[in-house]
Length: 418
Image 1 (cartoon, rainbow, N blue to C red):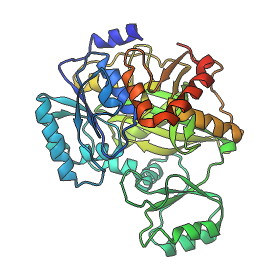
Image 2 (cartoon, one colour; image 1 turned 45 degrees about the vertical axis):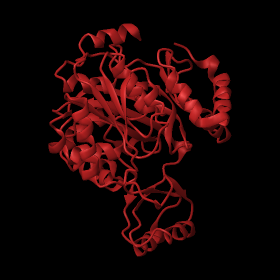
Image 3 (cartoon, rainbow, N blue to C red; image 1 turned 90 degrees about the vertical axis):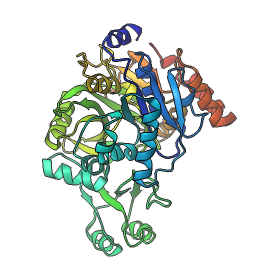
Image 4 (spheres, rainbow, N blue to C red; image 1 turned 135 degrees about the vertical axis):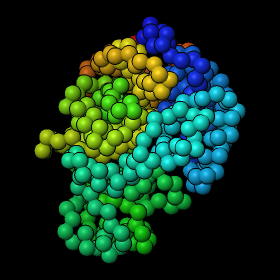
């Protein structure tokens, strides 16, 4: 890793800091820690917005300063913009923004003219990130540009749901239409499988006059594979860095955050992502979730996150580039070194992979394409050159969390290499 990092470090602009931008309360976020380490190892000064002074991100040796700013994600946009501008004035020089959630990515895009003075970020159509992060908006874009996706309906009332239930094929999946919009009581807690018409109507009675959900075709797990794409696209919507991989496990199972994944080359998938991004004119970092449906041989786009994904450190090229480094290099006028992705590299999120492993084994789930032995393993929390975030994470989990991670360590120890 040191040789690869040093080659990128030679071209990185250390005069331009990075700022991790996140809204809402989720202090155990390994993606932000990964971004701090990734740029910090290049000598880039790093700053972060944190919920309190005792988050794992705030404890990283690579963080120059944590700006403690508790938010809920429901604040008025003008208040959030003013808060960012205050932080920009404190940093005192142009800074690359690294959003780690949709709220931040959407806010930056919709207020880019106000933020462009103290901050550097990819310029996009102000309305595009919101459409991409919305389940309905993404489905409409997929239909418009001929990108396969699960069949989706967007009911506007309980009556719409009743009418749809008469012709729907069950099981189906319900999702919050704008999952990134924080609500006191979301319609569903996450991706929810609905087995029958009666189950759908019973749930829908609690969704109110405006349901705020999308109902999607269910893609059976026994006939599907979960794939991910991470990339960085320049101002011309051409990829400067592109990676593909297989999601081995997620938590909650099959519908949540990536717990374990591998890099696996997939030129067809990379081409699909590149063509779609070019068609919609997006620039910046992307994190895509797709499901390969073996029944019809299509990769179906489930989620388009217009920002860095929490598992982005899985993906690194032979030249030491990941998507966060690619963005910083590009926005500071540096060339992004070319290089093939590091095949077989594995990523493990220590605090969620063990429960995911047990759940998948109970369900008899297998993962095609995962290599028998990883060429290297990136742990989300534990790093020899930056141990405090891991220890802080343990402390916030408490004694049960520490015992859980010890069991995970013993379970996975033999499989970790590199």
